[in-house]
Length: 397
Image 1 (cartoon, rainbow, N blue to C red):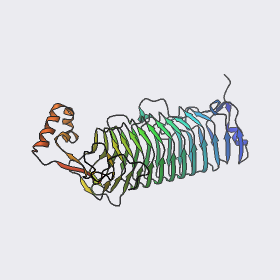
Image 2: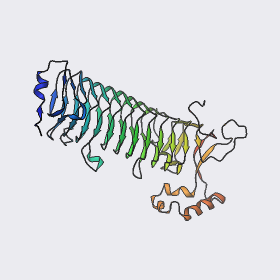
Image 3: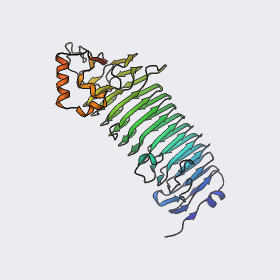
Image 4: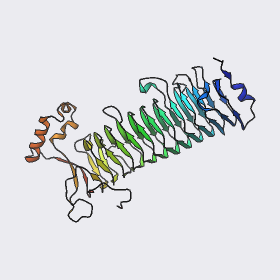
């Protein structure tokens, strides 16, 4: 096998703004790029390999493009954020059609502007424990970025922290921890992403003007696996997503004292989840309309038996459990859809009782409670105008 070719001298000798075409072969890293430059490879046959220490490629200049390269063997030190590609204080950087493997972090960008990550294939180090891997893509303090058509697998997260003006479009993320983690960001849209077999599909922590649209999220793993988890944040839009086979379809972690918040949950499909909508301490500040809730074990659950319910607009959803009539044939039920907490729901609030879930004992308690209540059941959730049939995208409110 031929020895790796030293690449740093070639980069140092190239004029700023030039293009370097790399033929198939193995090139020795790490390399550092401190000028405008295009590195063009031939795909999987053009390999830049690190030494197992530090990052493989460091980009510290603007107007840099890496295209059709394979990068591997970064270091594994978290305190230095070892990565296949590390971008720092740069602008107009594009990483396209690169393959990253055996690297702690895949692509890491910090305090940079106008970053484009297009069509890359990224895996972290071969570590069974997901928390021990690095993020496939991690952006911190980035302004204006496009992350489109990437495939992340067996990494940790696609992590966006304290960044703004971003588009995450048509990415595939599988067998990772959080498919997408958004933390204290502004003006971010995540649309048409496919998030399957992760511990959680999308985790949103704080931030403002965030839109989750037309994502497909399925089979989030473990008993606490969540399709979408919303924790804080202002002006949050959850639109036309399809969430299938998760422990919790949509989990809203909000307190009774939140101020200035608003969430729009419109046109989503919650199918075959353990619970479709799961609220933590309060049901407030939500507009929930035109969703399809079908085939779930529970439609609505909450962590507190008597949560605060205020400032909600909940109507026009389709619930397959609704048993009302439509005598005027307007497509909506004549009576509201109501979710009550009877004795058969006690297992949700006391983990000691979960042993008895779906047993004849719970069924008997529920039967007795409904025909001869020994305490007043709690009204948990009301859709004032439920639909008789699932809505289509052309339905008018």
